[in-house]
Figure (cartoon, rainbow, N blue to C red):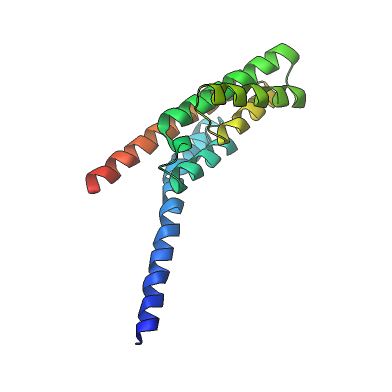
Length: 157
């Protein structure tokens, strides 16, 4: 085996590790939500939470991946969606209004979590209290799983 071949294999392993770690962490974060949704029939595993999981897993050091930012971002966004749906009725106009309100609130609080904007749009479009509650429960679960995984990773180091 040549030195070049050995170096290529080491690089391939490093690349595989760099890619597989975020993939595995994303699955650790979303699989429990998907299972809970399958059992309860509630949208605990909504697309905005999948986006949050990917962001948290791929860029854990980013400010947008902080547990508080994830929770506050989705909380503000769900509230904006519900308020918009209550004010003008559910639908696409409410979704658009909710997106604007959510972004303004997150930027104002310096807690921008871009995937949460989809929560505002989803809740504004549908206007479902039950769906909003399930989305918030999914957010709490996601943050708790994230913190548990971070704790275990820190203990291993």
